[in-house]
Image 1 (tube, rainbow, N blue to C red):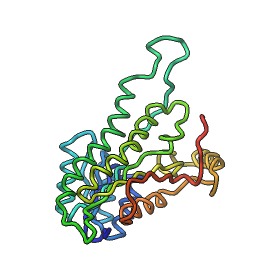
Image 2: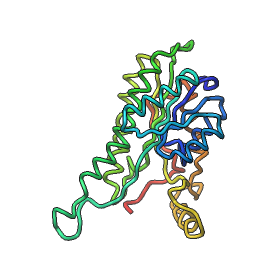
Image 3: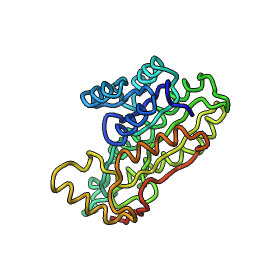
Length: 258
């Protein structure tokens, strides 16, 4: 699928995996809408890559529609990458046998709402407008890449909420691709492993922690780079024969219980 002279939306695009993807898309000639809550960094990145920033909560339908409308002004919307999400870690029960110490149900709902419902919310709305694109010679109108995590398959202790949400993203991949095949829209999902993003912080202690994490990776024994993620995301968007797939980007790691 040709990316140049088209528009793209990257949710969570102001930093980390989303930022890398936005840069990779811009380098391929796409006009990118950075849809994120972080206005300062999002606006700076959009200016740098010649895109547009739209403040967007993926659980807010009106804000998603605003991002889509902004993309349509830049060109036909052909690409969407859903990298917005929240992390959380806590065990299902406490140590005292009290109901009050069990996993907070509101937090569980919040993680599911953002990571799973938010992802689908963007997919259903963006695909609606993608379906109006003029198809190419093979009938293709667009492509979506969703972001799950290796935690969808190797969830660790304390990751029940996060793993549930990302497992849901994996689970929607095939039926969503089947639904959207009728209008020539492909859907794939990336399951990143340990990728070096700002979530790990900076400084000597942070670097030592990341180096220790890297020893558990099969090969190469390091954390992944965000540009490696961006490269894969763009390949899944542009390679017209990639559809309904979930792809681990993890250098062979299999997460241990803790």
